[in-house]
Length: 249
Image (cartoon, rainbow, N blue to C red; front, top):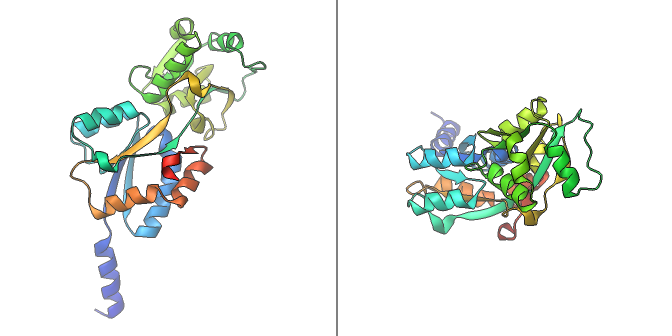
Protein backbone atom coordinates (compact mmCIF):
# COMPACT_ATOMS: atom_id res chain seq x y z
CA UNK A 1 0.00 0.00 0.00
CA UNK A 2 1.41 3.37 -1.04
CA UNK A 3 1.52 6.53 1.05
CA UNK A 4 -1.48 8.00 -0.76
CA UNK A 5 -3.52 4.87 -0.03
CA UNK A 6 -2.54 5.07 3.63
CA UNK A 7 -3.68 8.69 3.75
CA UNK A 8 -7.07 7.81 2.26
CA UNK A 9 -7.51 4.89 4.64
CA UNK A 10 -6.65 7.10 7.61
CA UNK A 11 -9.12 9.78 6.51
CA UNK A 12 -11.91 7.24 6.06
CA UNK A 13 -11.21 5.75 9.48
CA UNK A 14 -11.75 9.16 11.06
CA UNK A 15 -15.16 9.68 9.48
CA UNK A 16 -17.99 9.12 11.96
CA UNK A 17 -21.79 9.23 11.87
CA UNK A 18 -23.93 11.77 13.71
CA UNK A 19 -27.63 10.99 14.20
CA UNK A 20 -29.87 14.06 14.42
CA UNK A 21 -33.54 13.99 15.38
CA UNK A 22 -35.13 17.23 14.18
CA UNK A 23 -38.54 18.87 13.96
CA UNK A 24 -40.26 18.41 10.59
CA UNK A 25 -40.22 22.15 9.89
CA UNK A 26 -36.41 22.13 9.89
CA UNK A 27 -36.08 19.71 6.99
CA UNK A 28 -34.84 22.02 4.20
CA UNK A 29 -32.70 24.34 6.31
CA UNK A 30 -31.06 21.58 8.30
CA UNK A 31 -30.45 19.54 5.15
CA UNK A 32 -28.57 22.53 3.73
CA UNK A 33 -26.51 22.75 6.93
CA UNK A 34 -25.77 19.04 6.88
CA UNK A 35 -24.34 19.25 3.36
CA UNK A 36 -21.95 22.00 4.50
CA UNK A 37 -20.97 20.16 7.67
CA UNK A 38 -20.28 16.90 5.86
CA UNK A 39 -18.08 18.67 3.31
CA UNK A 40 -16.17 20.54 6.03
CA UNK A 41 -15.78 17.67 8.49
CA UNK A 42 -15.82 14.46 6.50
CA UNK A 43 -18.40 13.03 8.90
CA UNK A 44 -21.80 11.70 7.88
CA UNK A 45 -25.03 13.05 9.34
CA UNK A 46 -28.22 10.98 9.33
CA UNK A 47 -31.27 13.13 10.05
CA UNK A 48 -34.72 11.92 11.10
CA UNK A 49 -37.53 14.48 10.75
CA UNK A 50 -40.90 14.25 12.52
CA UNK A 51 -43.15 16.10 14.93
CA UNK A 52 -41.34 17.24 18.08
CA UNK A 53 -43.63 15.26 20.37
CA UNK A 54 -42.97 12.03 18.47
CA UNK A 55 -39.22 12.64 18.45
CA UNK A 56 -39.16 13.41 22.18
CA UNK A 57 -40.91 10.14 22.95
CA UNK A 58 -38.55 8.22 20.68
CA UNK A 59 -35.56 9.67 22.54
CA UNK A 60 -37.23 8.85 25.85
CA UNK A 61 -37.57 5.22 24.77
CA UNK A 62 -33.93 4.95 23.77
CA UNK A 63 -33.80 5.78 20.06
CA UNK A 64 -30.16 6.30 18.96
CA UNK A 65 -30.20 10.09 18.63
CA UNK A 66 -26.99 12.06 19.18
CA UNK A 67 -28.49 15.54 18.76
CA UNK A 68 -32.11 16.63 19.27
CA UNK A 69 -33.53 19.78 17.63
CA UNK A 70 -37.16 20.43 18.52
CA UNK A 71 -39.63 23.22 17.78
CA UNK A 72 -40.74 23.70 21.35
CA UNK A 73 -38.94 24.51 24.60
CA UNK A 74 -41.45 22.50 26.64
CA UNK A 75 -40.59 19.23 24.91
CA UNK A 76 -36.88 19.92 25.47
CA UNK A 77 -37.63 20.59 29.14
CA UNK A 78 -39.52 17.30 29.22
CA UNK A 79 -36.42 15.42 28.04
CA UNK A 80 -34.15 17.45 30.32
CA UNK A 81 -36.37 16.62 33.27
CA UNK A 82 -35.78 12.94 32.60
CA UNK A 83 -32.02 13.48 32.57
CA UNK A 84 -31.70 12.69 28.87
CA UNK A 85 -29.97 15.86 27.62
CA UNK A 86 -26.65 17.57 28.30
CA UNK A 87 -28.20 20.84 29.44
CA UNK A 88 -24.93 22.77 29.52
CA UNK A 89 -24.66 22.40 25.75
CA UNK A 90 -28.25 23.30 24.89
CA UNK A 91 -28.67 26.15 22.40
CA UNK A 92 -31.62 28.03 20.94
CA UNK A 93 -30.25 29.46 17.72
CA UNK A 94 -33.18 29.97 15.36
CA UNK A 95 -36.75 31.27 15.44
CA UNK A 96 -39.84 31.20 13.23
CA UNK A 97 -43.23 32.80 12.64
CA UNK A 98 -46.77 31.48 12.28
CA UNK A 99 -48.85 31.99 9.12
CA UNK A 100 -52.29 31.30 7.73
CA UNK A 101 -52.06 29.67 4.31
CA UNK A 102 -54.58 28.79 1.61
CA UNK A 103 -54.27 26.86 -1.67
CA UNK A 104 -52.61 29.03 -4.30
CA UNK A 105 -55.75 28.75 -6.45
CA UNK A 106 -57.98 30.05 -3.66
CA UNK A 107 -59.73 33.36 -4.22
CA UNK A 108 -59.41 34.20 -0.53
CA UNK A 109 -57.74 37.51 0.28
CA UNK A 110 -57.23 39.34 3.54
CA UNK A 111 -57.46 43.04 2.89
CA UNK A 112 -57.69 44.49 6.39
CA UNK A 113 -55.96 41.72 8.36
CA UNK A 114 -58.52 42.20 11.13
CA UNK A 115 -59.99 39.55 13.41
CA UNK A 116 -63.43 39.63 11.78
CA UNK A 117 -62.04 38.93 8.31
CA UNK A 118 -59.67 36.30 9.67
CA UNK A 119 -62.62 34.62 11.38
CA UNK A 120 -64.55 34.53 8.10
CA UNK A 121 -61.68 32.74 6.35
CA UNK A 122 -61.18 30.24 9.16
CA UNK A 123 -64.87 29.39 9.23
CA UNK A 124 -65.24 28.92 5.47
CA UNK A 125 -64.05 25.30 5.47
CA UNK A 126 -61.64 22.83 7.01
CA UNK A 127 -58.55 24.24 8.75
CA UNK A 128 -55.46 22.04 8.84
CA UNK A 129 -53.30 22.21 11.96
CA UNK A 130 -50.75 19.96 13.61
CA UNK A 131 -51.99 18.25 16.80
CA UNK A 132 -53.04 21.16 19.00
CA UNK A 133 -52.25 19.47 22.32
CA UNK A 134 -48.96 17.82 21.40
CA UNK A 135 -47.17 19.15 18.31
CA UNK A 136 -45.55 22.61 18.68
CA UNK A 137 -47.01 24.13 15.50
CA UNK A 138 -50.47 23.09 16.62
CA UNK A 139 -49.87 24.34 20.15
CA UNK A 140 -48.73 27.73 18.85
CA UNK A 141 -51.66 27.87 16.45
CA UNK A 142 -54.19 27.19 19.19
CA UNK A 143 -52.51 29.83 21.37
CA UNK A 144 -52.79 32.39 18.57
CA UNK A 145 -56.44 31.65 17.86
CA UNK A 146 -57.27 31.70 21.56
CA UNK A 147 -55.46 35.01 22.00
CA UNK A 148 -57.50 36.49 19.15
CA UNK A 149 -60.76 35.11 20.56
CA UNK A 150 -61.29 32.76 17.60
CA UNK A 151 -60.53 29.28 18.93
CA UNK A 152 -64.02 28.27 20.12
CA UNK A 153 -65.58 29.16 16.77
CA UNK A 154 -62.83 27.62 14.65
CA UNK A 155 -62.27 24.40 16.63
CA UNK A 156 -65.10 22.40 14.94
CA UNK A 157 -63.45 23.04 11.56
CA UNK A 158 -59.96 21.98 12.61
CA UNK A 159 -58.41 18.88 11.04
CA UNK A 160 -55.43 17.75 13.12
CA UNK A 161 -52.35 16.09 11.65
CA UNK A 162 -49.30 14.36 13.11
CA UNK A 163 -46.94 17.17 12.15
CA UNK A 164 -46.90 20.58 10.50
CA UNK A 165 -45.81 19.28 7.10
CA UNK A 166 -48.86 17.03 6.97
CA UNK A 167 -51.05 20.07 7.67
CA UNK A 168 -49.29 21.95 4.89
CA UNK A 169 -49.89 19.03 2.51
CA UNK A 170 -53.64 19.06 3.16
CA UNK A 171 -53.80 22.71 2.11
CA UNK A 172 -51.49 22.18 -0.87
CA UNK A 173 -53.70 19.33 -2.11
CA UNK A 174 -56.86 21.38 -1.64
CA UNK A 175 -58.18 19.01 1.03
CA UNK A 176 -58.35 21.90 3.52
CA UNK A 177 -59.36 25.44 2.64
CA UNK A 178 -56.80 26.92 5.04
CA UNK A 179 -54.01 25.89 7.36
CA UNK A 180 -51.90 27.26 10.17
CA UNK A 181 -48.22 26.47 9.66
CA UNK A 182 -44.81 27.96 10.28
CA UNK A 183 -43.93 30.79 7.94
CA UNK A 184 -40.93 28.81 6.67
CA UNK A 185 -43.18 25.88 5.75
CA UNK A 186 -45.29 28.12 3.55
CA UNK A 187 -42.13 29.13 1.68
CA UNK A 188 -41.24 25.58 0.60
CA UNK A 189 -44.45 24.71 -1.26
CA UNK A 190 -45.58 26.83 -4.22
CA UNK A 191 -49.04 25.23 -4.06
CA UNK A 192 -49.93 27.43 -1.08
CA UNK A 193 -49.76 31.13 -0.35
CA UNK A 194 -49.73 33.16 2.84
CA UNK A 195 -52.79 35.36 3.49
CA UNK A 196 -51.89 36.44 7.03
CA UNK A 197 -49.15 36.21 9.61
CA UNK A 198 -50.17 35.89 13.23
CA UNK A 199 -48.80 38.58 15.58
CA UNK A 200 -45.79 37.35 17.53
CA UNK A 201 -47.51 38.49 20.72
CA UNK A 202 -50.44 36.12 20.08
CA UNK A 203 -48.42 32.98 20.81
CA UNK A 204 -45.34 31.78 22.67
CA UNK A 205 -42.02 32.58 21.06
CA UNK A 206 -41.18 30.01 18.40
CA UNK A 207 -37.62 28.86 18.92
CA UNK A 208 -35.70 25.70 18.07
CA UNK A 209 -33.60 24.39 20.97
CA UNK A 210 -30.84 21.91 20.17
CA UNK A 211 -28.99 19.68 22.61
CA UNK A 212 -26.78 16.62 22.78
CA UNK A 213 -28.27 13.45 24.24
CA UNK A 214 -26.61 12.23 27.44
CA UNK A 215 -23.79 9.80 26.75
CA UNK A 216 -23.56 10.79 23.08
CA UNK A 217 -21.08 13.67 23.41
CA UNK A 218 -18.50 12.21 21.07
CA UNK A 219 -16.05 14.60 19.33
CA UNK A 220 -17.93 14.52 16.02
CA UNK A 221 -21.24 15.27 17.79
CA UNK A 222 -19.73 18.26 19.59
CA UNK A 223 -18.26 19.37 16.26
CA UNK A 224 -21.73 19.30 14.69
CA UNK A 225 -23.23 21.34 17.53
CA UNK A 226 -20.45 23.89 17.11
CA UNK A 227 -21.15 24.06 13.38
CA UNK A 228 -24.81 24.89 14.08
CA UNK A 229 -23.63 28.17 15.57
CA UNK A 230 -21.37 29.04 12.65
CA UNK A 231 -22.02 31.85 10.19
CA UNK A 232 -22.50 29.30 7.42
CA UNK A 233 -25.28 27.56 9.35
CA UNK A 234 -26.87 30.88 10.26
CA UNK A 235 -26.87 31.91 6.60
CA UNK A 236 -28.47 28.61 5.57
CA UNK A 237 -31.29 29.05 8.07
CA UNK A 238 -31.81 32.72 7.20
CA UNK A 239 -32.05 31.80 3.50
CA UNK A 240 -34.92 29.49 4.39
CA UNK A 241 -36.80 32.21 6.25
CA UNK A 242 -35.78 31.50 9.85
CA UNK A 243 -34.70 34.25 12.21
CA UNK A 244 -31.25 34.05 13.78
CA UNK A 245 -31.53 34.60 17.53
CA UNK A 246 -29.12 36.80 19.49
CA UNK A 247 -27.67 33.71 21.20
CA UNK A 248 -26.38 32.55 17.82
CA UNK A 249 -24.66 35.84 16.97
